[in-house]
Image (cartoon, rainbow, N blue to C red):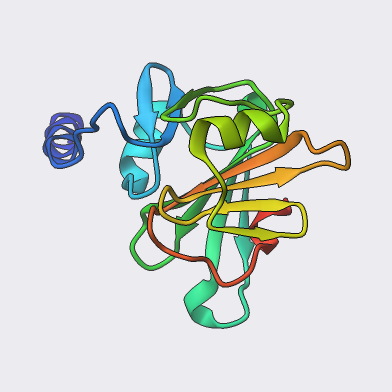
Amino acid sequence: MKKNLLILLFFISLNFIASASDIGIILRKQLVKPGTPLVLVISQIGFPDWVKAVRGKSQNYDFIAFIYKEYAIRLDIDNETNNLTAILLEDNLVELNGISFKIGDGIEKVISSWGEPELREKNVLCYYKKGVYIDLDYNKKIAKIYISTPGEEIKTIPALTS
């Protein structure tokens, strides 16, 4: 049984080889990004501290939140496909891949790295094409980073709330 699970994980990982340009986080020397199958997430970083079912405005927006206190992250899992759909970072406890700024940096560093966002909504910078949404605090410093599937506009920004 254990051998079959390892073989299954190996074949899944062959279909999910990451390139250097992928935006995500590095946990235990492994890239974790939107689209990662749940079985790989758990095999790479273990079980979460908290699991929370989150109800959306409609059933299509329901998801399961995996909260890892050790890393100060929330991983959103699609309840139909069992794939990782988004990552919410609330501290600098993980290494970022494909992002040259971090929580606490000013808005200037974001704009100098990536240019003007496709949309600014209140204190949120929206980079749809990269799948990254940046929540700014009252001092215009990065408070949270939300990483989702690139190229997909999310309908609202409540995903930045824990």
